[in-house]
Image (cartoon, rainbow, N blue to C red; front, side, top):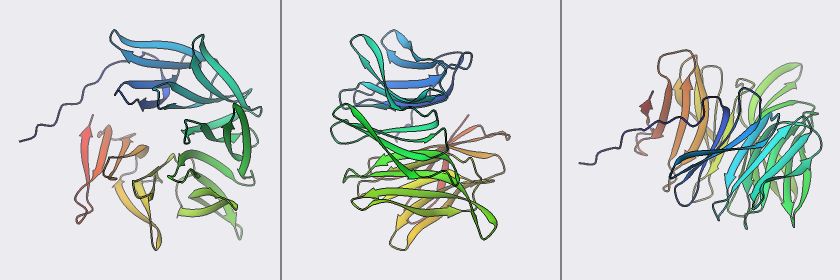
Length: 291
């Protein structure tokens, strides 16, 4: 009989918020977060002697962490001075400006060859995509700020094309709607499609691809956490958990393409919950971990 290892918890820092976690090829965890006392950007790596913590930048509003194929940490972040890309060199952390317009939300991903790219919302509320080529950053507007955007998540498909999931508030025939949308770029430019309507504005989103290239998007609305899968008939949405206080936190796919979602019960007694898809025929969602 297989025994499932118990969850182990350890303290990284006594004051932190907005964490972003990445695991490198050696299984070493890397963590970026904002110091809740002074809003500085911190980076932590667990070594033989415990967690080693470094300060990367000051007065940060948003961040996103990735680890490249050489296990080097990379961070996209935003503050009132703009959007920046930070990498760790021999002389410590170095930051490059990506966009001089201050940003509020950032998602970092890596293209083929470890070339970084970002999705973010700038100070005017535009949803933008930026990529680095030969150490120079270029940016494009995905959607202009006629609407309000939040929760962008960037992922790269196996063809090297960028995809962004995000929450958007928009008006149609004098009626206000909120929905989660999917933007993707091809040779013809950017296209945007609706994934799920009438969600709660401010929702976080996450986007991932399985080995077949099928996209999955997870988010929450007012009273439930849900997962959308792109199939032949379009986006299919299924409920993962339903309760007034369920708030989505993260999405990952295992090596077989099975989704797992982390969310938390903000006002209830369930705490942190990890849900994973059961047998394909049953399509059940099983709460695995509760704190």
